[in-house]
Image (cartoon, chains in turn orange, red):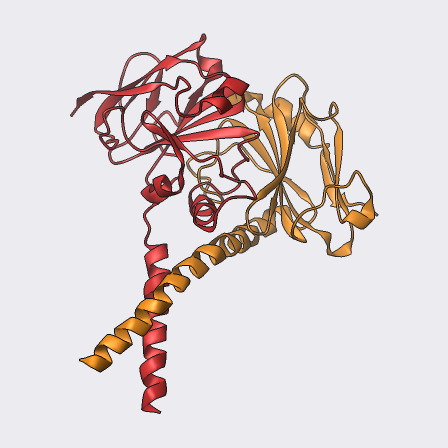
Length: 170
Length: 186
């Protein structure tokens, strides 16, 4: 009986840290899985213009059907990455960037940015004062444009195809 | 040798139980990670933020990956109606209230797996473009007028407020949000 109690005590002591370690790991693992799923579409340091989300969209949970998404998997291994966001003016658009632990470390929208095409550079502190410095070398950048009417995607596509995500030195 | 087996099995079992306990948290446990309720809606000011605690970040990564930080967007989620009853696709609901104070807003319906629901109409959301300063629409399999279609079974709603007014941030728990009234069930 004593041995069983000791065994259960050891197991119980491990349970709590295991719970929180799993919780800590979860966002990193989910990010890796999602990036792996997106990679054939988006590539690294390249922009992929996704079609408007539907019931057949399973890449990311809880997609907003009111947004046109463009996705860039960024990797700063070879230096800074620049993003140029080009959208029709007069409607909401935003650029948001996510670290490898899923934190949204940067966001700007049409009211807080220059008129499109608006340029953003992601890099390290050594790359300049105006550079956005991610907390992780890899992550995901999303461009969102409000889709007031799902038929508006044609007009948005016409402009957003000019958007860019690429290494700065190309 | 027996001692090593004794300790290692306890550690392994404890670790598996701890990890499984986290993995088995249902999606509805989103409420655990939220900090503010407002009628049937709940939200977390830590969503997407670098300051989010471990549990909030983990649950959001499962239920709302790539959410914007609350400086940009407030996400209110509802799993039940204004009387506290879980949503049931066999029922008809009315969502009614004043339009939230935000640059634009939308209400999206999701299935229990947190993905968009397939319906004959394939309409997934209703937003500021559909209203005239007020919110008044149905959630039902069939209904006249403005409607979010639903299928049988549980579902959830997400109200997104993009660039909310300062007054919303100051009163997240009391800012006017639409009521969700269950009208009838089949």
